[in-house]
Image (cartoon, rainbow, N blue to C red; front, top):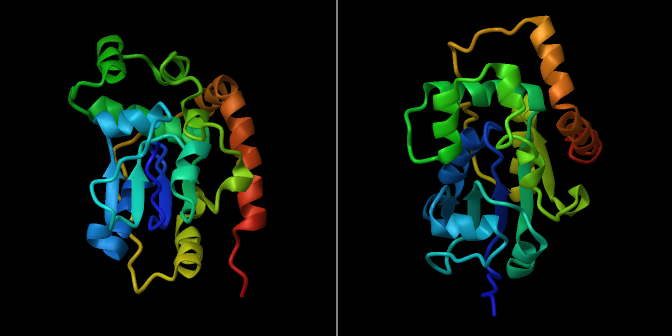
Length: 219
């Protein structure tokens, strides 16, 4: 029987290159030792395969990291709010590409293959390991079961909304992991990426439209 964590307050799904590092810093500031992050290792892999959530201690109030949202996870944490941040697939992929280009080998077979092949941006978007990754993080959970869906493009406003929703204390918004050396791409290249990522873009636009309608601060 999976363990039920009634004390868990927040589940934060971090899609790669979607403000997760900046947001993690803010969570650390607000929750300190009551935050547990999942970035690799057996426990993260178990969550990705929709296995059981296992926390290091019962006092944990927030989990954050690279894991898949699932109905099973929500059943284990009946009192937790489920949140995530999303980013336009073209901008996310460009950020992903240049991040991987600058990253040393670290045991990720997909990244190792990337370093070996050195694909261009458009070719990178067509790799099997990139297809469907964005949607995979949402598992079997529809958008209406999320308590908050933030847009990276409106990060500051989103943080203000969350602060009100979650009753946070004083904080300072900081954006981490910005790649200052990331070059601009041509209009033609962007059109090619939009074509390659058409399915992800359609899903993003649907979720972003829902987010703008539901999660907006009222004065």
